[in-house]
Image 1: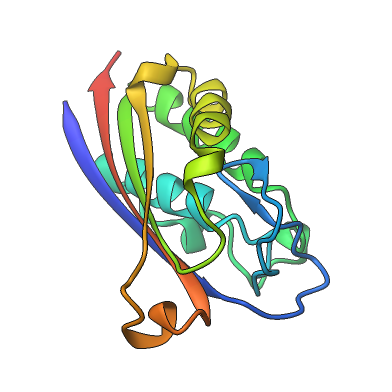
Image 2: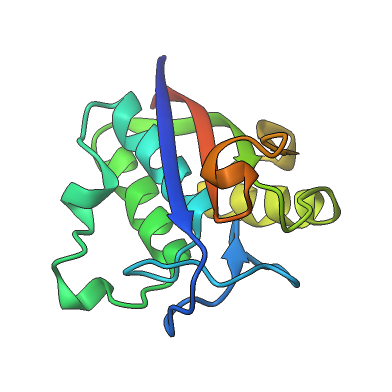
Length: 159
């Protein structure tokens, strides 16, 4: 078994490619996120945690923002490719624990949908996926509502 840690953050803005998804789920009242792909900051943190767990680098190495093929890409595709790459290297996902830090949108109403979608993409039971929301108590740029950050811990197991 190995443990990985992932982190990602995006600022809010008017990115025309953003589809306002978190954890693969459309989230109402979520400001658009500035990003090269679709801006799903939750999936990006999960990808980084999984890649880190097996020492395969990071999301930017596998899906660089300098490559036009990833412009506006659905982050679910990035996660599916990451899970396939793990399997090709003899690993499977055990579980993930995700913390979303933002003042808006409220995460609680979307937790079950995000857990369900992430479990589907990861090939695990819903009980192996934790998603929780926290505010930053109005501190720093995230607390001022200028963006969102996500932390993820993953466990992977040898196949």
